[in-house]
Length: 69
Image (tube, rainbow, N blue to C red):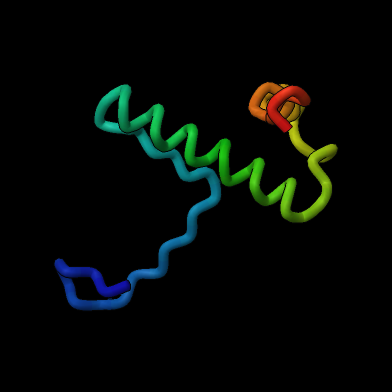
């Protein structure tokens, strides 16, 4: 990525990247996007058992009930 100040190339390496949302709504949207992506990859990959307990609980909560299936 070019450095606009000097015109030279800059190498970016992120180990523990952190990003703060500008407001609570933006944080909520970012968090739910992350959660839904984690769930999709686990379910699509066929191994939701590797999810954290909180995400497995959320997945069970969001599953269609037997009455509506």
